[in-house]
Image (cartoon, rainbow, N blue to C red; front, side):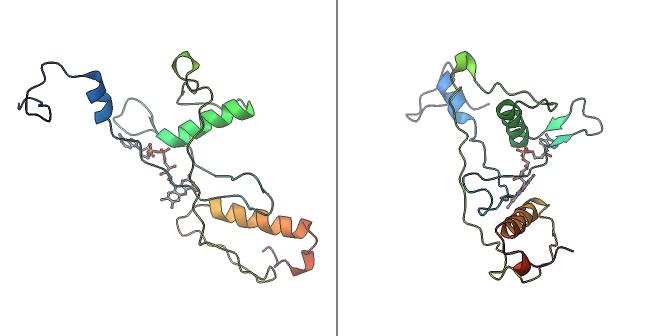
Length: 157
Ligand SMILES: Cc1cc2nc3c(=O)[nH]c(=O)nc-3n(C[C@H](O)[C@H](O)[C@H](O)COP(=O)(O)OP(=O)(O)OC[C@H]3O[C@@H](n4cnc5c(N)ncnc54)[C@H](O)[C@@H]3O)c2cc1C
């Protein structure tokens, strides 16, 4: 096997810990459809996610999704719910170093929009997108009704 070399060509006799850490690939972002409506949730954004937890033949442990299980851990901690966790994350980190850590989230402007006239009927078909964006649309329609434009809101079928 070819020895690992420094940039100047000399061989490393020991692998520096920093090299090992820097060699680990950054975690990739995960994308989620916004499942809330800015009309009803003015300060928050909801996501609706399936927590990945698969049982494969010939694999002796459940294969879990990294981010959906992290989100579930955060939800359980923040909302103090007793949902069962399959994957436990130490959210506070060693010596509580991450206790004030905030999850990095970037929001992209959506091109997926309701018709501007609330009376226009819509048919919602999920071509593999899941239910998330439609939950947002339904919340928008419910809020439009609550705001008193009931007669203008298209029928729910
Ligand atoms: C535009 C867009 C919108 C999206 N919107 C939503 C949304 O609204 N809601 C939603 O739930 N998802 C949505 N997704 C999917 C989402 O981005 C994630 O891919 C999904 O939540 C899984 O992320 P994870 O980190 O939990 O799983 P990962 O850790 O990325 O794992 C992905 C899958 O691979 C399996 N896996 C991991 N390791 C192995 C292995 N060694 N062998 C076999 N299988 C393995 C896991 O069990 C899991 O099922 C969207 C994706 C896109 C591109």
